Image 1 (cartoon, rainbow, N blue to C red):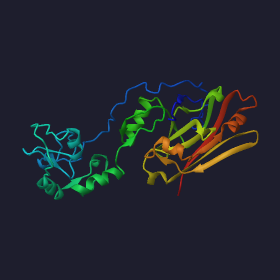
Image 2 (tube, one colour; image 1 turned 90 degrees about the horizontal axis):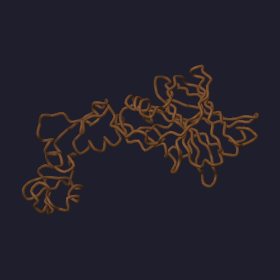
Image 3 (cartoon, rainbow, N blue to C red; image 1 turned 30 degrees about the horizontal axis):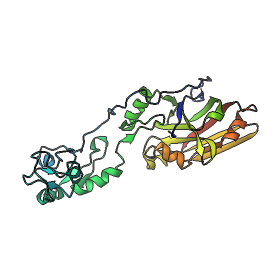
Length: 307
């Protein structure tokens, strides 16, 4: 969400359901619920073994797996390099001074191990050398996604089904079936709005989910409105789809066509890259009507799958 912005509920007309109704815009409590852990959470390492070697590789302080340099105290208690700084060079187990002793034997043992990805339960079945595992997991296509909701700083992560349920149950996001849409965004006193985010809408289309964002912000010194679509999945999957957006009135219109961005890219990153339909505020008010006292902007669009 743009800094200082408020979350706003959109007035909606949906072609996909055949309904024609309008919901007055209202403020949404940005942090109405505390973040909760996604129900699709997985084991910390994705390692399932009765072998005690993996326990030896756990840092005694943070309990994460350790990577070189692995440090130890004179009594053999080990910890990772990050935690060595945190404990101010004092062993948290025996209180001896740590010094600069490396546990080379444990580093060598780790080098001989092959381990599964921590996202194994989400579909990644590859096996990696211990020291390659961490680098892979940073880019694994099965890794958890961040919540795409833009109305608050939400810390929930999970797989796509978990996030869909979370958006519906916790953020009360509107869910619609269909690949075409017709939204009408309404706001009184639009001249007072500099940074605002309207309620997210999620579309179920081609068996996948797409997030429609609409907001107002300052682009340099110019106030603008922007609409864009994000895909609930990876970038490679997002490239299989395209979408178009259109806004207009009085025999004039603006159109946008592009590829939806993956929710791997944050809402802010997509917005700041201007990868969507951008409408200068004066033009938006012209499309709304001659009095320019209320924003009544109709955005239509469709999603299709590339062959």
